[in-house]
Length: 437
Image (tube, rainbow, N blue to C red; front, side):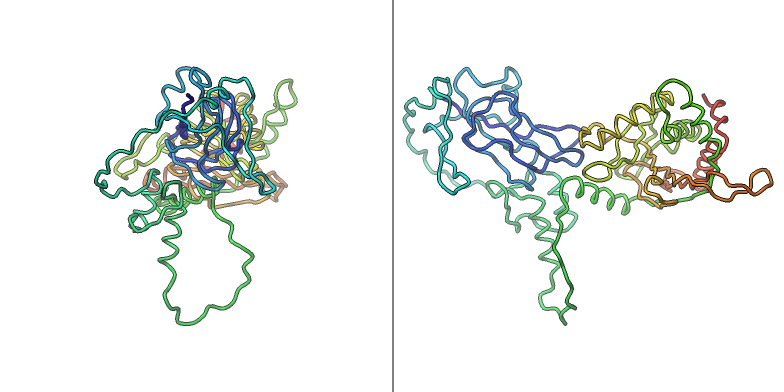
């Protein structure tokens, strides 16, 4: 007699509590192998394929594309023949695993033409033989017991927090998920319904609306993070123009020798690690309750990169331990991973300081929002030829604008100004770095 194994969404790491279904890779009735990917999900950090540790016949799947599934909630159920179709040890330790007899020998699903079809199981397989076995007798119904107290069907802590912040009573919300599970979209609909006035005084002017683009996956995570940063962090920005002529000359000199090419970003990353060693209070973050400052001994350097899903911030771990050439290699690897969308959640989290090269967009300056919970961000504009007074004479020099955004709770303007001035001096006189290495 086959048993049905329930595979739940595993913990994808880095404190993630759920994921959004992007697309299903299997249908109900399909025969799958152990460790075969069954669904593609999008977390706040990346798009990943989730493999199932069971092999057998897919009997159910949970969640439609665009719906959020909480960690620990069911993804699929698989009919497994006794002694087959399980990944040793892994299957036995999955949270939420269930066993129950499977009555019947297949699952009917409509095909694309609207007709019902039954997906066959390979003849002679143990799964097919087990599915064809007579069903076990059905036990008599258990006595009716009194109903348990009402439990709000919410799994995701993010949904509970959103409801709490918006003042929504979850008992009044109807869940649209499996078995009435309340999703984030249900809370958002409740908030929107509450915000609609009962009887507007006058009709609003007509406007042409082409449609509403929902905030989902990475875009929603970015929106939530930036909103929180803007709400919680008292940020300030200072900036200065710097003559980058000597820095660009140094880069050309380095790249004229055999070996990997050195990018401008790698040189700027090297300058950042040296500057943070001089001003360690800027490599920090404020505690969740705002009662203290966390000083970080390692520099996990985040940098803005354009990916297929938009702007992301990969992180170079322990950047202070890497040479300029090693920094360049890691920046290049992560940039390519961002371009093709293969960054992992671990590569997109844990940063302590961000380098934002918005000069690649052809602009000179910006006042960015900090990457919460980080306390500081260095921005670099485009490097272009401009009139500049050099050694008492007007000349055309390669000039860039540097901006520094910082959490005013962590430091005052003197520290921020000292950091930015040191960075500018290193850009103008890169030989200064030799004193720090």
